[in-house]
Amino acid sequence: MMPRGAFPTPSSGSRRTLRGTSCCCGTSSGAKGSPLALYSDRHGIFQHSPREPESLEEQLTGERHPTQFGRALRELGVQPIFALSPQAKGRIERLWGTFQDRLVSELRLAGASTLEEANGVLWDFLPRFNARFAVPATQPGSAYRKPPEGLDIDGVLCFKYQRTVAGDNTVRFAGRSLQLLPGLDRLSYAHARVEVQERLDGSLVVCYQGKVIATTEAPPHAVTLRARKGPRGQPVAPDRLAVGGVTPAGVGPHGGNGARLGPYKAAPTREASNPIHHKPGPNHPWRRPLLTKSLNT
Image (cartoon, rainbow, N blue to C red; front, side, top):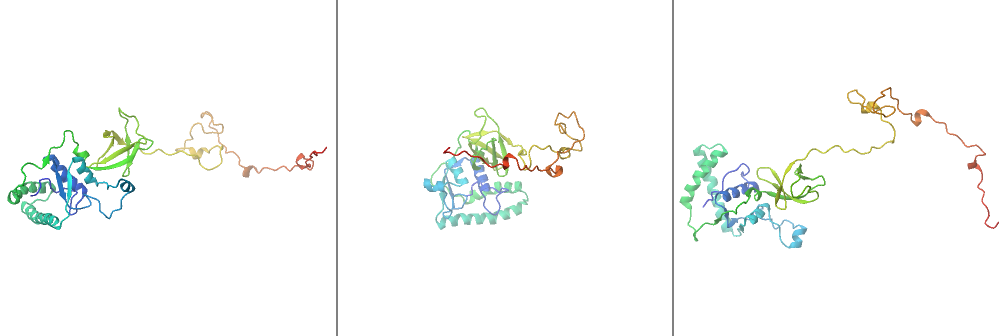
């Protein structure tokens, strides 16, 4: 039986992606609820590869961290069941082969050329396919549960990452800088550990202890003023500070507030003044021998 949650999406092409799998799961959860279990293969979307090295934290705890989709299933209370037998994997692969062959013909006969038209053909095809090939379940009843009240399905089926807030109350993620706005509970989140959620629509949401924080795009970084190498205390020539041919006020031979704007002369340097060094005379105290008093006298 083909679940009604499967549908073509812009992000799911010939290859399986986490975004496309999350979209299918979100559509199924919104229509029927969360399933009790999910039967899948051992793809990297559902579980880590055994050949993937464990992190230090995983070695200390003795448990592998779930993948992004595995974490979403855990939050929804869905038990993952991984297919280990060739018979189970072959059964689902034969089903996908049937759909990849049959749906192409259905789309061509319907003249579907856009994503919306393809979804319309799929919703018409699935009931007919299920009515013909569905097998009654051994146990009666629904295998889906209603989601709890107030569940934000977009906050579950997303990509979650841990970040540390910088000292200027900003968070950097994927080349973007988000400014955290002060709230009623906390004015600043500097050096706090927050959770950044990358939603399926591309938006970013920052959460702290389960609460969403209001954010905005951070302004660009200001120019950093620092001391330059060179002699200190020398006045700067006005032509180096002038903007558009106008000398700024307060720059002149006397500092001031701009009242005197006469011709400015740079301070003479040692090379320009060529000072004459004075040589001490023969009777200079520096040339006299040092007289010391004997300790015995």
